[in-house]
Length: 126
View (cartoon, helix red, strand yellow):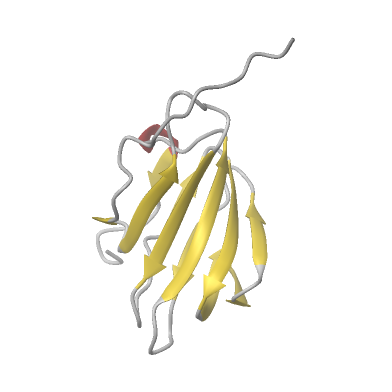
C-alpha cells in the first residue's frame, strides 16, 4: 500500500520583491518536497531581471504579457502560452519592453533555494 502524503505549505506564500528586480510568489517551495518548486513571477512594465544562472533545471511558463527571454546570450520573443526549458548553468534574464507587466510561472527541479542562484551581473549592469 502506498503511503498518502500530507498537505504542506510554502514557508513564504505571499508575493515579495527580489533584488533580482522581479516580484515572486512561491506557490510551492518547501523542504517537504525537495524535488520540485513552483513560483509565479511578475516583471514590471519596462523591467529587466538580473542576469543569472541556476545549478538546477528551470521551466518558464508564460502566463500573460509578452517579452524577451535571454538564455546564454540568445534572445527569444515569448508571450502567453509559450514555455521554455533552461538547463543548469545557462545564463538567463527576462526583458519586458512592453507597457504592461509580464507574468510567468517557473518550475524548478530540484526545488529552488538561494544556494542554486548565481548573479552574473557586474556592478555596472545592476
